[in-house]
Length: 75
Image (cartoon, rainbow, N blue to C red; front, side, top):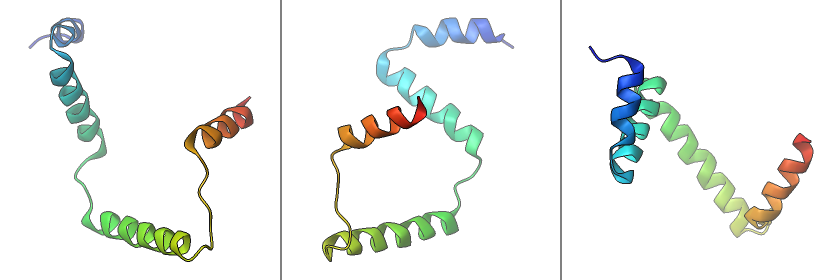
């Protein structure tokens, strides 16, 4: 079995799409099996948030402003 250094060396020789797919597969392996119940709950939350936006109950902010505010809070 190859050691970690060998695997890293080989992975760096993959093209960008292959490295991205490998990274995604590795990250997914850390999360375990996807939960259909969790996915359904997130769908409910997403629909509720979209409905609130459509009804004018909440407003959207540009992502760059949100990121700037988040970075300033972390300082």
